[in-house]
Length: 105
Image 1 (tube, rainbow, N blue to C red):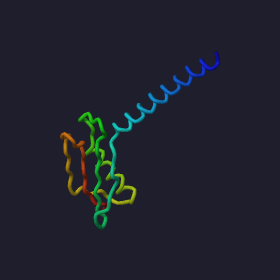
Image 2: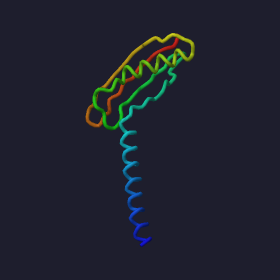
Image 3: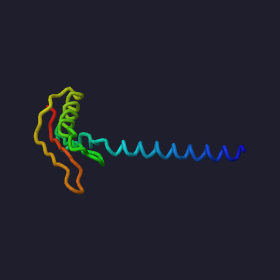
Image 4: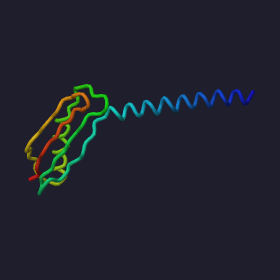
């Protein structure tokens, strides 16, 4: 009797672990990611944000990249100056991406 109960309980636990793992991976793949500010010169940086594996098309990637850039400059006690921006929409095989070049003065 105990062996049957143990086997049923073990199978249920494995299903729960599988469902939780799949759910976690799915949520992580939906998130956008950032390169963080990368120095490309004296007080000049480039920062990119990219959508996750299942983009909805409404991610505010450019706004998020600009806000992260402003935060970088304010953490240095400097003013943010936008140099260039670029943004691409989802094309087959490409995820939406926004790139900001900025300086902290």
